[in-house]
Image (cartoon, rainbow, N blue to C red; front, top):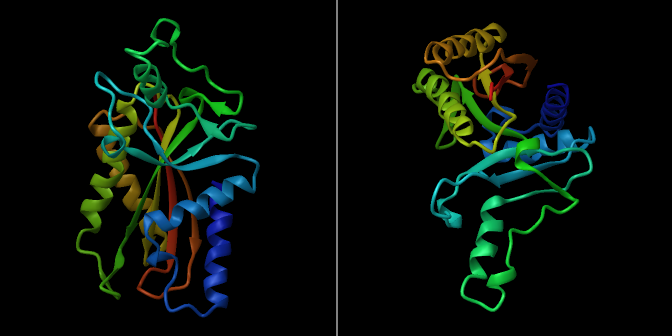
Length: 226
C-alpha cells in the first residue's frame, strides 16, 4: 500500500501546485490505472493494465466477450502474462491444416508470467461527493456503490479458477478521515455475512485538496482467500 499512497500524495501535490480546479476525487477509475502502474514500476514490481481474465469454461470467448482486470502485478523479471485463451485459439487455428498432427499448445515464454502466479487487482472509486456534469454534488448512490461495487469484483475474481492471488482496491473519497474506514468496514461485514472469500483489508489514508467536499482519500485493499 505504501507505493500507492506515495503516488497519490505526489499526484495531489502536483494538482495543488498547478492550482487545478479539480482534485484527485475527480479522477475516473481508468485515470487511476496508469498512476498505480507507475507506483509499482518505481518499486521494481512489473504490472499490466486492462488484462483479459484467463479462464474459460467451454467455448473460447471472443475479444469483446472477455472481461478485463484493471491491474495485474507480475513476478519480478516478467513483462507479459501467458494467455490460455489466446494459446487455445492458436491451437484451434491449426485444425484442418497440414500442421494439425503436430500442433500443440504454445509453451509459456521466459518473459511471461503464469496467470496463477500473478496478483490480480480490480479497482473501485467511490466518493461521498461526486462530479455530475462538472458540478460537485452529494453522491446519492454512495451507500449502494460501496456495497455493490467491491462485492461484484470479489465475485468476478473468485470465479476464475486460474486466479490464485487477487484483491480489490477500494479508493474512497470522504469529508472526514474516519468515514472512509468505517464505511468500508461496514461493506466488508456485508461480504463476510454473504460468505464471500475475503480477508481482512489493509487501510491507509491521506488528506487531499478539497474541491468538491471530499477532504480525505482512504485506500482499502481487500485480499481474496482463493
